[in-house]
Amino acid sequence: MILNKKLFIQYCLFLLLFFNVEIEAQEQYIVEKIEGAARESNVELIVIHATGGPDCDPNISFKSGTLYQIIQHFKRNQKKISIHYIIGRNGDVVKMVEENEIAYHVRGYNYSSIGIELVNNGDGKDTYSNKQIESLISLLKQIIKRHKLSIEQIKGHELLDNSELNCNGKILKRKQDPGANFPWELLRKKLEN
Image (cartoon, rainbow, N blue to C red; front, side):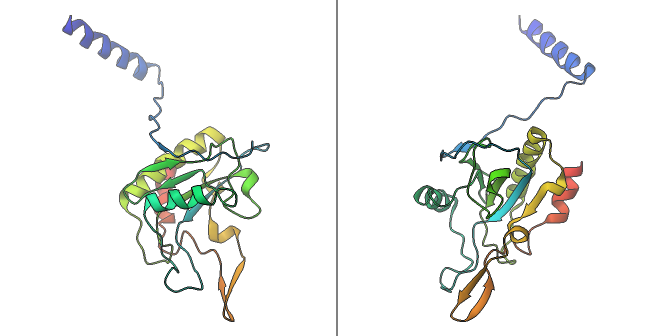
């Protein structure tokens, strides 16, 4: 009986290879559901964010927090901000808003974009872990395929939001994420393969 199971499995694998059937990776997410309004337009953009950023208070400026803290932040503030996915430093992917729903993560682009937050200070110094980037690449490949997007349709938050922050007379660019340390070149190279 065991021999027959092995032969059957080998035969199935042969058929999959022979007919060039693609096996899509099983999506594994931690789900922390936040409801979004139904999306009425096509997804045209994927926006990469970092969870940290500038602030007038130096104690919290460019401080990220843990994956758990970021999840709780979105849950507490879901009437104002939301996100489709968060990727922790260890590569864990948290799904919050469904892709067919609107998340509020980037001014002027919410209705046609999918937002992905990476737990990172976003200060251009904090490094992104290999596991985090591997998870991001895997997720991006799935989103690109589902929505028939191109690599050019992936943007950093800093390119889309030019608003400013006035800190006691000093003007700062409000959104600087994912930051100067984000590996854009590696990301493009991996997505092209």
